[in-house]
Length: 320
Image 1 (cartoon, helix red, strand yellow):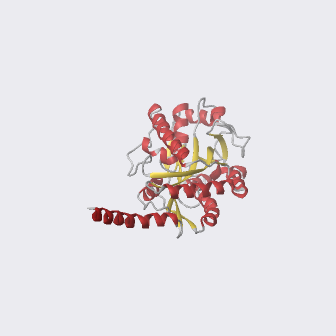
Image 2: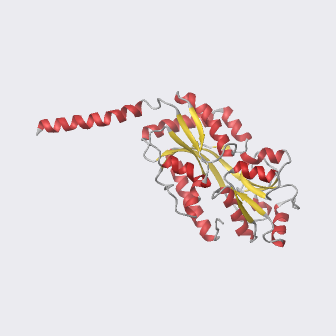
Image 3: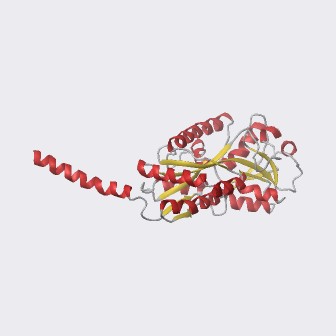
């Protein structure tokens, strides 16, 4: 019996050893950050800024790969089902906490990911094409009330761009039609070309167009004004009392990733986000650099899933 026990113990040790060795040697090959939206949008830009600095800290190349479609769900689902070895990561957004309020998804936001750290927090910004007869949000809402269904807005699937305007519509009791897009970049291009009337996304993705006079800013979604656009009021200030919606970006791994790998990635990300060059880039783009522990990030996701579920039910918001 003793011999059998010893042999069994040795077999278990040899079975576990490769796994432990792989974790201790992590990383020993290139790492991918999956962006669930098309190239050129805010998610893509931030992921590439981070990846350039993260690679040298980890001693490996970190590449960004775009897997767009289905409101980001193709990319989200891809990472949720990826091997939890630390070599496939996700540039997640607050959008992933909104989807569960509208439909059953092929992955579970709360259990199929291992949050590593947030990267930035960001207000969303509501913008319109300058040719619209509205100089501020009150005039825009008055026009919408006088012309129900005449105005439209772009949305990149179920996420904060959609929720920004749908929540405003519900709280202000106006009818504005939804025109769906696959991501920020194509929607913004059509807005710049005058094919749609308005759009909402992070300040990061829209600030240059506003500063260049190509788009007119109506308001930011947080309780405080954006430091990069101090003259733009909050949506609450501009005429929708009680309005607030904030966004974030963060890095996640597949659920089940070893704690040692999560810890190493978190420590490296925190260092990247603290770099003066990265801080300047993120702030210049309209975002606030923001790092957390994995536990804090997990709690943020849990809170947001519950919050958006409540808002969708309370205001009877539909993803039409």
